[in-house]
Image 1 (cartoon, rainbow, N blue to C red):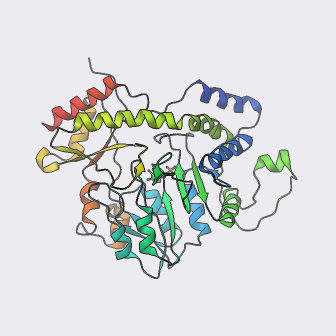
Image 2 (cartoon, rainbow, N blue to C red):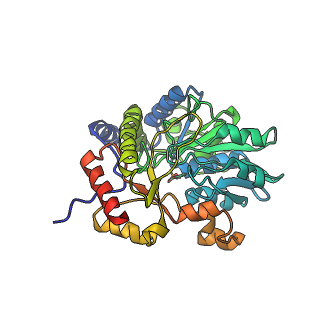
Image 3 (cartoon, rainbow, N blue to C red):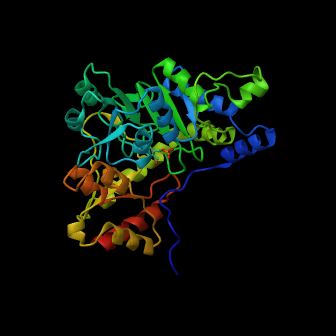
Length: 382
Ligand SMILES: Cc1ncc(COP(=O)(O)O)c(C=O)c1O
């Protein structure tokens, strides 16, 4: 008989989350309302910021922010190739140009020297990814940008709870987006959060997340006047109370989640260190607190003498699920064809894009399950 399937990801949802969602369902108010406001307040308190905006996804948070930064035709945004494609798609759909940057071979974070190489008078923003829970070197990007009018937007989809030089990501960031997709360190089912130092941007973003009318249905129907005004057309990107119900309790447990993830990540580091055909991705040499959103290994495909797909299939045949974070986005069909990239461009991203896999890592993963994963990796790799 086969061992039970170990999924790549498993959200930790307990009674508190379930009861809070049920409370929303029976309350008669399930869309954006008091629970979303409560979640936003909890985040603002945690980050020590004036305001935070909960929305329907991390991608939505970036879309709204990019709109507020007036990113459009003629503009360029620099982002690492090793990222989720939706981030490049937003740039493309706004009529601007995503300019893909190479990443560090060890850490998979966007190389600061790439910003220097790719930056020009059209560059409107850079969008570094805090990959796997490690934080990209924001100060290094800042010193390259100098006093040019280029926004730094931190993609912290992997980095809720991470710290950079003693400060939590979100607390000192100019602009940052988070994701609460079910695979993320904390989840709201689907969801995202935007935090930006510029109050005008936050106000505009809030209005844009609600079609541009600036008031949620809760505010219109329960709190203030039912009438509304439209300053500019916006999006329908609001978070629901049913989602915030999850988030309120997930956020309370975030530090515990990270502690449990860290324990498992350190155990992976130890158990995998002697398998020569694979390598855990490297750690940065400046001070951060890693939140261990995912645990990523790099396959030495030459030594293994097989493709990543075969490797993943072999794990699957042992009932173990893994993830890919990420393919090299510049080599995905649309971007490769449109911008005429070849395998010579961004060599680290090309190599990592075909050799990284992410192992199961979540609070409910048991040491026994982890041992099974490590044993399977050892057997396939040796
Ligand atoms: C690095 C990164 N950025 C952005 C996103 C987009 O987040 P969402 O799925 O909430 O839109 C993801 C989600 O997978 C991600 O991993």
